[in-house]
Image (cartoon, rainbow, N blue to C red):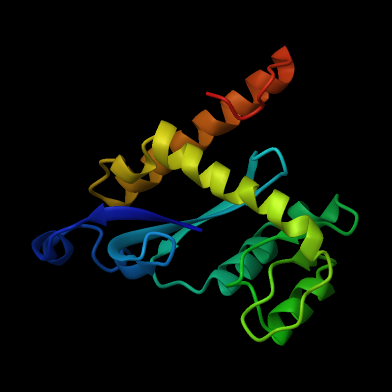
Length: 183
């Protein structure tokens, strides 16, 4: 997931139409608190978004992912034993058991104190994909400066950016572009 900031001042948080949905959360990769939402993405290895959820900043990532799979069962139906590449926050025996019951193999780095996990040698080169997709949304598509002031406005602006990313990937794939996710 990646933060979708919706305001900075305390006054904005109190009087905004987004109050009740947007909330304070912490972004570990930026080492900062923010007020807003989180965009949770499920993408292909090429960075093509195939499912998403827009939630409050404190929503548990593991629960959101399981909810995405339950709401969109077709995501897993046509795939034979998909592998999910995730970060350290996607952990827990119950969570991994739930994924296994759905037929999903989880590839994530070991948390502090855990033994090295199967597939660890594959993780580092692939992990950059996750960061790259989020960076494309933030830097080239201005996700952090979406300008939405209402739930509908934020949703539409986030969807515009996801559609632009999807269209760029489709176009580059169809035209044989050297970089699939290049805008």
